[in-house]
Image (cartoon, rainbow, N blue to C red):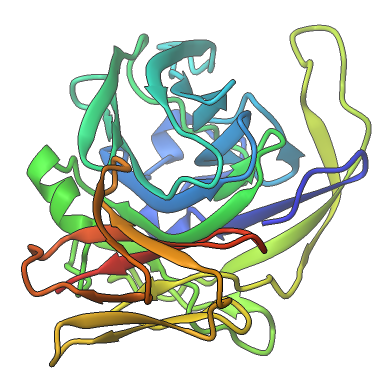
Length: 328
């Protein structure tokens, strides 16, 4: 995902239509969308501020949509509106955890929306980092035309997978979905970004039906100011463009950096870097960053590792490259 400029922003988005119908600007009675949800993404930020993922009005690029997982100076947090009994949508939760998400760090970020108990739960790599109660009568899904997004409020970075479930996932289910191999009935949306169509769309691999995701370039107007609207940008156009594919999940679909690749030989239980610089040094770590193995050759025997997700890094004077490896 490219960086925000004064006139352009970049965002992965998909329609909320598979969660149920709602009339734009209609009454609460006309809104049939599922509200017990779990939204997850594999993501690597290139900035310490902005919204990683959430739900926002289609016509705006804003920090005050329906809800968002937010980075504030590198700390994970949440923002959400709630629905008032009178049909209004005041701001509600705006909270920061003490959990860091560093630039160039791959992580599986999950937001569980429990509309029944009016609660938001934020997880990093399957571990709970923040939990907050909602006010009003539940989550404030705005009745405007809305989209789920990755990348808003000046966020940019790399994205590998997006999942949206119509259920309240448990911690055990979240950890299992980090290395998901199928699409259960409750997994409404799933995008893995390993195949792009001629119209620059990504096919929904979830069980909810047809609903493509797009990487969009947004032409944005000057931010509104005053009356509580600071930081809200109006979008004059949303155009699907071809993204730059830079990294991928090794062991599911091998997607390589240009000239450099990481190959997993499941029969030999071995991973190996190909076309790496001669001065490279290599390490394998868990998702917390704890180094488990090092290698001067770029070859790792992974037979002793449990089935899980790991980070494999190449270090060179020409720069570092990190791949996410799922052993299965």
